[in-house]
Length: 127
Image (cartoon, rainbow, N blue to C red; front, side, top):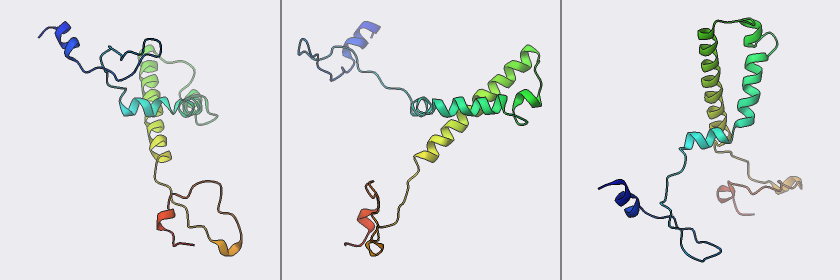
């Protein structure tokens, strides 16, 4: 089966055109991998982490290694910073998506539990 036949036989997307009211004829494609999406949501964390790692006072690579490196060493350090920043970002994303538990609201103190929905409401005794 050649490429044209495979593209013609591929499943199609389900979107509808607003103008022509016809279904999309483009082949459906898979999205980005989950780790890429997690990194794309953590760009500020990656930026701040790498700035602290490279330029941090007394802990940054600039003060520990010095201002000049050979090209190969600089490439190695840059690769290490990139890998370490991405690993920290993925760890931060996993930490932020952990299940959170809140105690059941207690009406005896007269305080409002909060404006957020209680994810553990099904485990709380009825009030």
